Amino acid sequence: MSLAISARPHGHTSAPSGLGQLLRRMLRLGLVGLGGLIVLAGVLIAPLPGPMGLPVAAVGLMIILRNSYKARRAFVRFQRAHPRTLSPVRRLLKRRPEVLPVAWQMMLRTERLIVPRGYRVAVRSRRLFRRRRRASTIVA
Image (cartoon, rainbow, N blue to C red; front, side, top):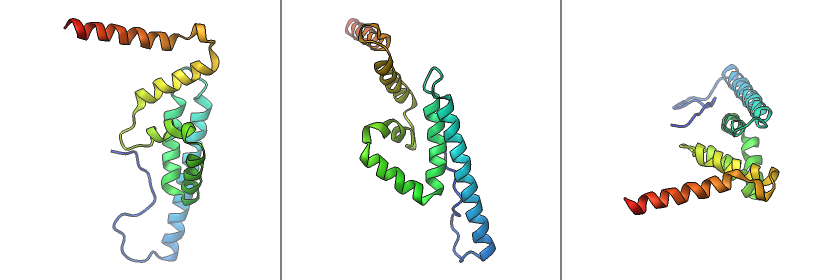
């Protein structure tokens, strides 16, 4: 199940009254503001070790995209312009997010940006793990 917070009523058939429409708009604006604060918190904790900032920011982005038509349009435009940049975010926005593969991919990307080629630990550990795994499946 998806983490969905939306101000859209389900099964609402009659036209909303003026006051109801105003309250709904205020609720949507409040949810967009809450989503913005959650995204900001994700950006602030992103430099900490581990990929914890990205999932938090993805939750905030989910709330924003569910409640703002303009944000949805801007996100789609940005996604079409920069598909590689937003691929981890898109994977986390799915109904069943792939958290561990995204975390691993982000760790590899971060290591590639920061650590010189000879000192990269994650790539070597992945290769070592694959060799051990292959050897254990061949013997069994």
